[in-house]
Image (tube, rainbow, N blue to C red; front, side, top):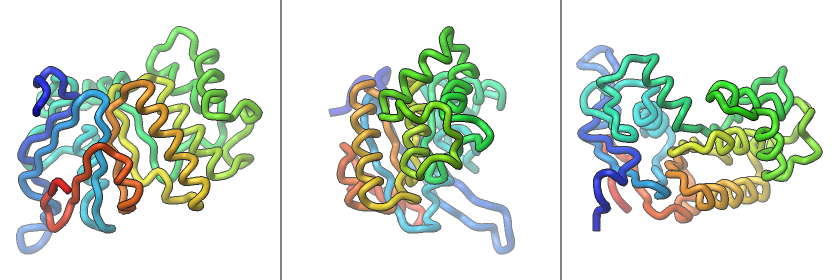
Amino acid sequence: MQTPESNAVLMATDLNKTFPGDNGGLNIFNNISIRADAGESIAILGSSGAGKSTLLSILAGLDEPSQGNVVLLGKSLSGLDEESRAELRSNHISFVFQSFQLLPELSALDNVQLALEIQGHSEPLKQAGYWLNRVGLEQRHHHTPAQMSGGEQQRVAIARAFATEPSLLFADEPTGNLDDKTGTEIIDQLFELNQQLNTTLILITHDASLAQRCQRRLQLHNGQLLEL
């Protein structure tokens, strides 16, 4: 049964995306609609090149659809300018990427602290340390990304993502650069924090076994988004 509309963190309706080119351009997907409620976990599956990352960019307001609309936390993205969309992302959305996206010249502590400072947190240093400790990096506060393993770097990225207490977390192939054992540990931590904070999670993956851990699974195939 559908929950009340006010419980929806994200609602996308009739999304189309076409990149300009010869012969009418390249159509990525057609008439995609998706709803994500508070605390819900959703996996979006698809092969390489299916358009998963493009869809994520549109849902997060990083890119615009050719047609259709996205509503985040009750605000229509089509009605916001780029500055307003950036402010909405900063205050309510976090990301975990395959490539970690840490600033290489900064320590683990500084990478997390910077995200909190951008959000305007009153105690960014204290909170950054707390979240690094929470993901098991008590001994890595002052290490730069180059001094850490891939798994440790992804833990920093997870600490950074959850430190701002987002309403919505997008994870794009978060274990893609990790070995199986480390990847499993990272995903365990991601889901544990997701449940504790009641964050809505949208997970982009090609891994069916990883997708099984989400409450809902969607398949992006031939431009259509199908419920599995």
